[in-house]
Picture 1: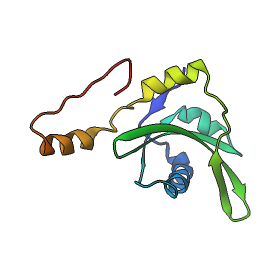
Picture 2: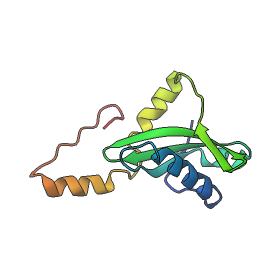
Picture 3: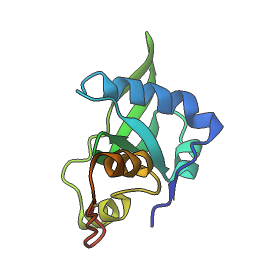
Length: 126
C-alpha cells in the first residue's frame, strides 16, 4: 500500500518544484503540492525520477505522476504514461481526496462568505 506524506524530503524539493512549475504552465489557476506518494521510493529512483504528487488548486485536488529526466536544457518533465488506472489505483485515489490538510484555508474562506456550510464526505470523497 502506498504511503502519503505531507512533507517533501529535502532531496526531492528541486524536482518537486520543477514538476509543479511545469504542471502550472497549462492550468487556469495555480496548484500547490500538498503531498507526495511513496517519497522513499522516489528517493531511491535516480534517473529518470518518478514523482507521484498530490496537487491542490482552487476547490480541486488531483494526484498526478511525473517523470523527470536530465535533458539538454536542464530537466525534461512529463506525465508518466500510466494508461488506464487499475482498480487498486482507483481505490488509492479515494484515500487521497482530500489528502491531509489541503482544505485548511478553503474552509476558513468559505465560512467567512456564508452563514453556514455543509461539508459532505462519502466513501472517501468530498
